[in-house]
Image (tube, rainbow, N blue to C red):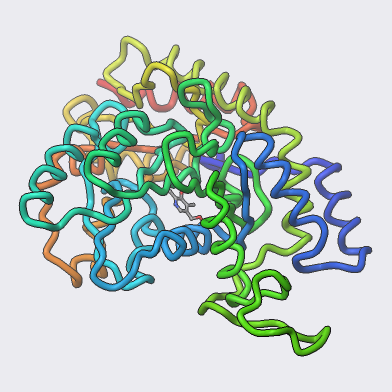
Length: 386
Ligand SMILES: *Cc1c(COP(=O)(O)O)cnc(C)c1O
């Protein structure tokens, strides 16, 4: 089976992890800050705080921005559930923005319409979580302008997109946001097995995220509320969690970061070849906006039933039979039974997400995908078009 995505592990990666295994620190030790500094330097943010997953990092980001009971958070309808769950963890309610039919990212015009209505009814969001789907940045400059006008904060869910660029800045620089979150799950661009990271340019947010990652505990003399009672002394100041990354994970992430540029260029090359193969056919794919370099975590194509005579289910089954393990990213979040139990989200409010859901297929893209396999994928798909 050719997977839709997979990690690329080198001997250097293996050695880096083994070195940590033989060291004094297995969990958060000296390697975590090295990884944080390297990511921060790469993306051009002032601070980077590692966590044990992007899901944890998103939760920490929401808490740091003060999301709580009674607050409203908006995110894209087409994303992994974690982009929305993080707000629910904090007791907030969630609503969704339909995607743009071409870029697959949150539609800025729909966002603006929804903001106008929300302002009238006094239900503006506290935080917006744009998701850079497949590795392409959302239209952050315009989203940022809307945030100034309507007074909300921004967390970029950049789980797909480390190494991507927007307006000449690396995603994660937080030029147009308060916090950016990355995922280092094995299918993502670089991996630490499980792992995530927040980047920000705001020192208060960085410190709060850092505190909450470790139970809300500090040992820093300058931060203590009371006088130190001795060298054993520490204080829990907030209700935090154990969301720490291990040094084993950080060593893998740090070693992978060396190859980030190579990964991005291999992914872009594969994408270009798919685009060449499918141009002129009835297959459509994500349109890249000007000023964007995609990290191409995913390559999504859209095929309509009228062009193949086959339902999406049949296409999936046929491709799997041919040894191509296609996938779907994602089921619109509001369709999940859990979200339906919270509120009666209506499909008619999300026409582009519904259309996407009925036609989108993620096809294989990852740095080690060889050219024979890639051509086989293109040919197999083109062979289904009438
Ligand atoms: C993978 C992913 C997450 C969660 O990442 P983990 O590191 O697995 O917790 C969140 N948001 C999006 C968009 C993702 O793709």
